[in-house]
Image (tube, rainbow, N blue to C red):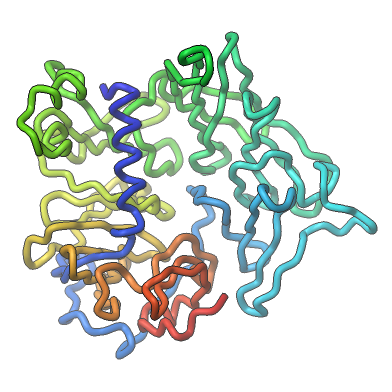
Length: 424
């Protein structure tokens, strides 16, 4: 199992490269024989493609934006600048505060748009569900209220159990009447009598029944586990495992020749399993074991509804949690230096490239059809998707100066590579 220090180094490394690779891919070959073979991929502007509504289950949490099934747009927030959420309608390109109380100042949880120290939020079955920090960010709570308004209700809360401890939780997804939460407990100590430093961390995965508030433990120790998807009683995880004889990273690095890449440590000692787990029985089935060449994505969009995406060698696969079947979606025609991938709008976005080249494709899960996305000659995608609603994507668009700006784009324009259709 990964040490907390090594896990932190992996997370920091992923954060450092996510802006570089969020959208860089190579030409795939469709292999969905049971769903039909695609023709040679063509540039998106030359053809049209199907778009899909956002899933009603396995509602994932991404940054400070969430899809709104009730409005057809987005919920968005930035509690650093304002204490309330906003609704954004990409059709009319208007923003408003979803509060209907006369004279409300939108500055405390009596307001329908305020939840406290908001960390994440989803809309699900006519209600808001939000993960908030409490007690000066040392505790966490899962709260809810109807979209139509009403008092804020606490479904579950997690408090520090010891002195110098903080309990900061993460809402992972909401699916089939339950919220799935990582409960993270960090213990702090003074360093040189001046600075607080985390010296220990314990993480578990729990589910919270959205009707009763009952909390059930899924995994006592979730270090190294990354939850991709939950569909009914079936969940998919990626698991990072260190070899039993692996030395501490710092000790290993001190014994290596000068110039040794830190990645060599992972190649020698880090194994990855991709597995399906029955949440009722605890039974696990490996889709990919540690001996295979699992290719990680640094994109957070690793599942969409009942589908989870993963790559082994040069082939991308989709696992259908409802049918509990695996689909080999396509294979890259050649080896590339870098790969990345995501799944949005019923499509796998496949990205590959080199330091100077980026190519990207959208592959429809339903029929295996492939559309090449224009990367405009850059070494990253021209538009990186962060969030979606029924007809639009929100994300970062690369402008003519090479900088990125937050924009919205219709799904049709995205697949046609019509980035001039993006708007702010």
